[in-house]
Image (cartoon, rainbow, N blue to C red; front, top):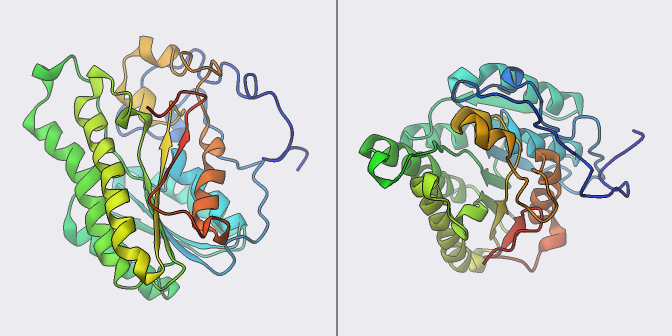
Length: 297
């Protein structure tokens, strides 16, 4: 590779105007529907054996942040279970192929994790096909922009919380039954937990709940040698953005950050690798912000 994640680059211009001219797409959104496809590290992420022999479960692993993490984990030596919605099969197949191209096992599990039994099925597949679970990445999320608090329906509120919070808890319960000392849980939160937008009431509140849960669970399972942390992305360019926001928001997405642009999924993957690896052995209950310079306050 001529350029990888270690190549010195000006962060302001690394992905300049990556979403320029993008229109909206139908939810949940496929990568192939996007005019400007995100960078998941397909051509740039270089592994160094930091997760050799590990077995990882990644929810929402078909596209966006989840795909970037799956590619990075595989290139670091991990086998990967990818959980995703059935309508995202096309993206899941592509992600699985990148994992296999890295010489690792990819297991695809289609289903809606709003169902507790589906969460159990995801972990069961990891145990039966990979032999266990060393890393759990709770990354799947639902958001839909609102006009204001009056436009938030009970149906959307329940969908957001069952996807973003309930499923995370159910997956942790199931995975912890199989985790040994040295295992790691990583929950995807958001800068919205700290700087909420009125058009994302339910989503932002659910992301704050994830940070609270991360701190809580980390204290309980520390005595078992298991670490729990969170990554809080800022504005990251994924199919979720054009699938859930109005076109004017899409065209300006991420420009209000100090670095002046949206981030790419490939720029988050190293944070997940770090928290999954032995390098972060004394870190638990913490949140790493990947926000383009926006402070987590």
